[in-house]
Length: 267
Image 1 (cartoon, rainbow, N blue to C red):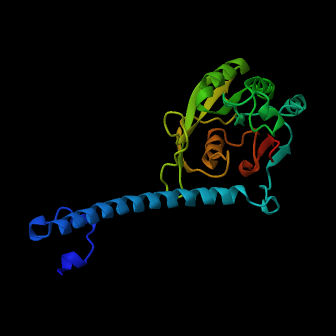
Image 2 (image 1 turned 60 degrees about the horizontal axis):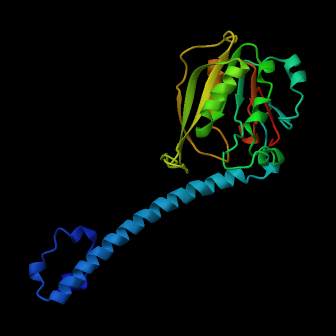
Image 3 (image 1 turned 180 degrees about the vertical axis):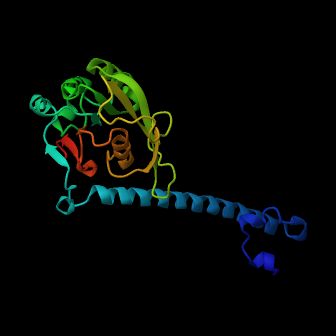
C-alpha cells in the first residue's frame, strides 16, 4: 500500500489530490470521504476553541461575582449607604449636600415581566413609575446626570431627563470585551448586543472646575461581574469635574470609589 493510502489526509490535501493516480474506484471514494470528515473535524475544533474562550471569560466573571463578602475591602474614602432607594430619606441628604455629578444605573423593567416583580426582590427590576419617583431634582442644582439605559428605554430615559430638568448633551458607549480583548457579545432580540449606552444630561450651569473636551465618548473595557460598569466611566467623570461631589444611585459594592457617595441595597 502506498504512503497516500496509509496516511490520513488533512484538509490541506484537497487541492493536491490527484484522483487519476488512484486506480480503485472504491478507494477514491473513501479518500474523498476522509477529506470531507477532516474538514468537518477542523470546523468542530474551531468551534470548540471559540467555546472554550467564551467559557473562560464567563468563569472569570463568575469568580469575581462570587467573591466572598468577607474578603471584600471597600476603598478607604468611599461613602457607601446601604438603603432601599425607594424609601431612603433623600430630603435630608439634599439639605446637606448638592452634587456636581449623579450617576444612576436604574434596574429597568423588561416588557416581559410583571410590574411588581422588581419591587419585591431587591430592586432587580423596577417599573418606570418607581424610577420616576426618585427625587433627582432635589439633589442637584447645577451639574451632570449620567444615566445608563437599555435598548427599549431610550425614549423613557429622555422623558425622565426632561421631567427632572436636564438637557441631553452627550452619550457614552461602552463596548464590552472579553478577557482576550475580543468583542463580548450578548443576547439580543434581532442583533447580538456588545455595548451599553450611558446618556449624559446637564442641569443649570457648569459645576465648579468643570473641564471641556476631555476623554472619549467610547469606552473599550472588559465585561466584569453582573451589572458592574467600567471603571473608565468614573475616571472620565473625575476628569470632567475634578474634586467634585459625586453620587451614585443604585450602586453596588464592585463600583465603590473613593470620594463618592454610593447608595443602594446591594452594598
